[in-house]
Length: 209
Image (cartoon, rainbow, N blue to C red; front, side, top):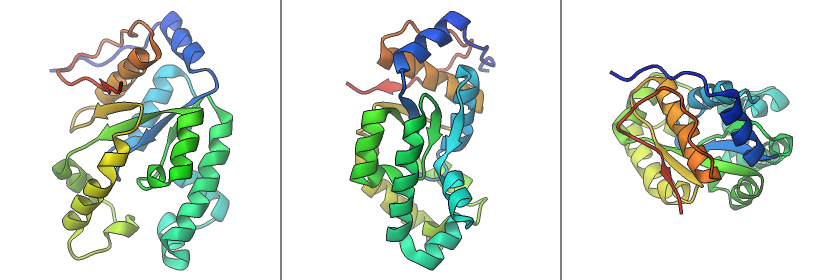
């Protein structure tokens, strides 16, 4: 059984934050991958602010994401999403969780590359289905066959997500474990000695070349 992670040392945290500079740690991936939950844990470990682009969109528009989709359609929603994310990226360092389609926008992706370190939480289909079936607020899954929709989205989006700076496999494990693996992958990417978090797992983050 995996041990619960301990907080990183002040020296290790400071080294990571220094290497990060003004960049944000930006989580990308499909709905249900855990971007918000894991993002919050990583922000807590690193003592950084946490922002969720969907929550910010709902705040500025005073409408829910499903309402925005229904009233204005996906293209208008993506345009608003792009503007919100570009504005949020000005406020680094921070941890930022983005919607599943955000990284598919070339301009948004370029901004994330310029002003952040992107982390793809890679999940398999069964895990995603288990998680998204518990919520009814997924506009893209309002379909008689949501599993087929998810499979199509994986086919379309995973090759683009794979261009993220880091790939960290996620699974049905404690959020603390996945978050500690993200921190270890960040350290490797930024050339920092790994921050010991006390979490042990057979699965580790893959650092993109």
